[in-house]
Image (cartoon, rainbow, N blue to C red):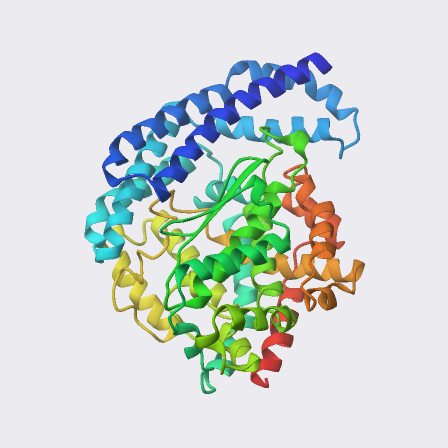
Length: 501
């Protein structure tokens, strides 16, 4: 059995290496590649995607799994070997349903569409990307239909990133959360808005990046195994446990954008850097789900990075970095500014209280598009109408409306956005568990010390990769299934104090 297991691992590593080579090309496309390389880059990524898919769906892997599974069932459920075989079977059965030529088509199309979007968004030209997005919708439906028997066409697409969740279960969570959130939003926005003018002074790019980098180094992000670059839409990308990169975008008259996207992406990256080294290049070497992954970024960005204790320590240092801009701005004013609650246009800039309403809007549009209740050509008008209904504001242009997120233009329609809200919910649930184990964590954050929190996350979440499903990991770490209660309690406590609710 050991020889067969090693044979399986070798085959999985080959497939992973090809996928990773494609990821390197994507990273280059979104950071440094000249626009003239787009057509060839799409072809190159399609070629690698097809080769990786062929390797992963080789019938030899299926035969090895058949031979190994009886042995795996004799092992403890939480053994690494049993988990590897279990997770590989799940991935293999999913991938063999998708023809390798179709996988190549998706890779080629999404690479081409990303480049069109990157050029169309700055000039507010939705019509330029509309034909490509219509094809994306067709491909998304076609992919879902390789998995017949679903309750909703969105289910297979959700399952790719949040295994075990369905459109119905996500919708129920969203409805419950929305019922709790809307009264909080209404109570806050009925008050005079917080003054955030201090965030809109001139902040040189180099200093912004240096300040953020120093914070995430203290968090535990290892720059010997990572780097930060600029891009159109911030993200984290993993090439190996020893090469986990993050990106950001900088606005010199918007202090909070690059700073909090840096904290956010470092949360993703520390998760990836912390996965058990023995899992590298296998299906275990990734997060348990997009929701669990997002919980780590939102925990570091918001629960830690927007906390009062954090800024008790870091605000004097920020004032020293930007004395002309912040010398006369009190900590109370700054703290309220970075936690300002307001109806806003951009999801990635949204505050903690309204953020999930942005996600729900996108989730509902994905359902409508996939169900053919909404056409791509009508999406901008539908977006603006729904935005006015939910937020009381209308986007002045498509760049700040339907074109703002990369997901539909660099991927598929369906399965990506629900993870953001699931992550918000889980961030509070995991942090509660960390505090039960280490009540001293908030005091340590107030002293600029993060090792206890990082070590707890490393031991309880990071190291496991995808050894456990999201549901299993949540139960294991918190002692209960996913629940919105800790998250609502966190929001009410923090914003109740800020806004005298």
